[in-house]
Length: 523
Image (cartoon, rainbow, N blue to C red):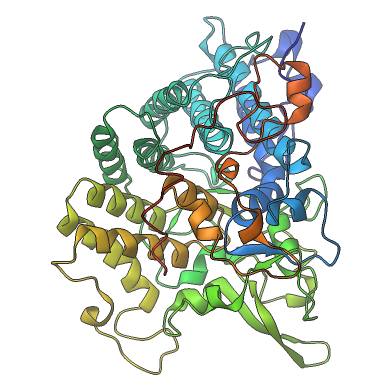
């Protein structure tokens, strides 16, 4: 009997937050969910798989985009193949993302079924809240899967993985929206206990719902895209209690975890991940070569991406590290290619490549504002859309003071003015998304939903023996179904077009993907 391959179900907390680890054998069999403590430990197991995806998602979503390449001396292997667009269905990162998300979904399904039973020993309102957390996480995991792979098996119960087939994109999105609707009514605005920091909130559910509807509205074959845009705006408006951090880099300051802009992030704390170092390998990938000018595992494709920033935009120095001084010998390295700064510990550069306890940003308020702006603009409500875009720009320039404090700037200097055309604001929003979200696992998703991935990457010049422009093809709008999964269930898990073993017709022929008239906002 064929089935989707899932790693074994485990309910153990490693790094969602700093709660006690509960041994697996105390949460199985007759003892399962007989107390509130059991239930809280079980929901931690739904968060748990996400801990180990920082490197994988960075290679997949940033590395496979236009703005990031592998800086490793020896190309080849899962990560470098991803960044050079030479990956296939056997790629380890392609498999890791698939299997890890389905592990989280499996854990969520088990918990939802257990908490829905009539004889659960979990008290209210905790039971409802935990159901909300599980449904939020299941929606988040499916949102990644449907964007990365397209049609994917929609598994909602423990026995549905047997000979499962791929559900349509619209079916998956319908379930995601359903789960998030349940989550918004079950999750709290905030948590009273500091120990619960990092858990999903109502604001996180609404923020994700806004993003889901925006992406779904731009997906081919969707019914009533205008309704999806309207739902996106409504969800964005429902995100309450957050604001932009005045200092951009506060979002990645270890001493300011769960700050005013943070909506949902993956917590990484020393000693809690299996490696004991915090587990966020984005830090290592960005600064693996420390003070050497040799490029690290992941680096900006070329200097033109750095030069897109105005020097007065605080996001430039907040996104990239152009130079670093070694405190042990006081020597300064001026990097030929700037490093991704957001997960580099600038207060402890010597240890930054090995101390990996930065929280990984998943949703923050700037994203909500730009999601809302894009949805409003797509609805033709351009005058309204200008407002949230300008909020993001005003913070970037710290209106009243340039970022370096040497000059002043007025609102008029950097604001998009009333009267801008819908098309020009669309391109402006796309530029702002690049400037705002460097190295935050947004870029590939943005290029795909705008249907400009191929066109954009074809502009990239060859770098470090990596010819992205020459390797990019239409098939890279989706990742391949992992070959190991297809070996178990080749009929249900048919391969995406363009990859070895695929038998389906080219879904992009004659479409806007092939004949993209738009761009990413940068000429």
